[in-house]
Image (cartoon, rainbow, N blue to C red; front, side, top):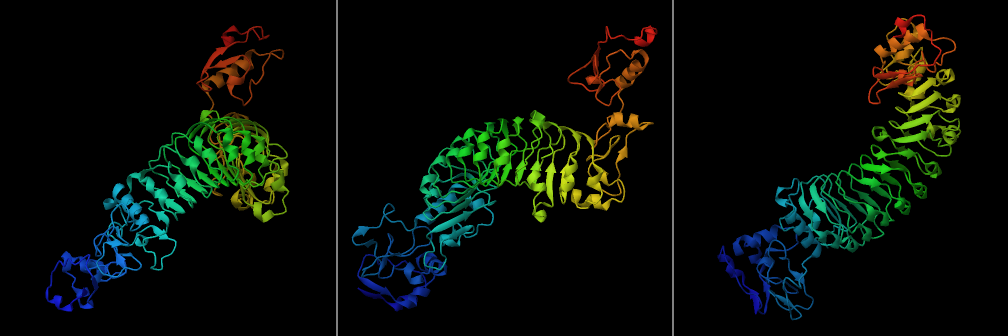
Length: 553
């Protein structure tokens, strides 16, 4: 009974076993005996758990744990026990304190397990982890409150981006009852979603550039989940994602996703950002995309998609950024250039596809006629590397300022009005040029530059080789050429043949034009070749001149 006496301080080292007695106090003079219990007294005194060295001798009256005294590390804290009459108790209200029924702190147990199972000893920038301190002091951990009253409770956020985690995040992570966000990006680590339903408050998940393969269980995510960033993984299937209807931001870029974009995409009606670039998606964009009436950004660049660009995209009033570029390698989007006459787009990229026809007169009509000139003054439109024909519409002069890339198409003209006083066009390059201002939009036929336009006032569009304008145009027949084709040997021979044996009555469609010789009447080329790959000349019964048989041979 009584108090552990101060006179014991003459012993510099001691292991005093006095648990489960009727001792009520440890004299304060012993709280400084740092080497007692193999140094545990000093370690506990120095910890951030708000405990004194005396607690490492006996848990004070009104507290308990299974050891009867405080110890460093997991499970060592003295826990509250209202009504406890003695120091050094291992039970409270008659219940033995065991590993099974003592939850010294669930959040701490979960994060300590995460540390061990993901190679914590080799992490970078994680000095507080694995040292027995309060979980709210761990690097990357944020708690609901950090006022010292719940040092091991209510973990709100775990951000271990780039710490060097390996293996698999323990599924218990979803049992953190106050968890709102987890960030595990830039680690070689996997994460299971099968128990995500337990994370009742989860809002944000980011585990990009990691080692995630399966989304099994993600359909059970609570309605609180808004953001899911999984880019740069190797995902097996995304079918369950279409059931997570609460999502507002979804990033699945660079994740080896194949197959088609499901019509179920329309179920994700709360999406604001959808990014699925650089995957292996095929097929068309489903018309159900129009159900995403909050969508502001859509990125499907660098896939294997095809078909026409759906008109339904023009029905999404909130859409301001649309990227469907770089499908050309796989055929790409085809059909006419979409008008987007009602859309409020600020950025549009349809480059490297197979769009045909001319730019419609109602292209970007709502933007061109908008009274919010400052909002749309610097719109960016990229339609380069398609098969677009005709002139740039004259009504483009209605734009206050715009950057439009039409290089490497079949554009036949640039209206001079676009270049007269539109100093803000093409990021201001039109205004910088003192002459040939239209060259900042597209290099004229018969000339070229690597970008199809002048981007430096000192580097002008370069004429193609040739003695005449007509010869130069055979090598760069359209505005915006990125290179001069060069006059092929087969073209030279065929043009000579045309001049020597064709008559006014001969069918000579495209002969002598700037079009590829493979399009000339009667000419067949190797489909995998170029203009130097003519395989057949078929001109029988074409009323050719026959007075020079050697020329015809």
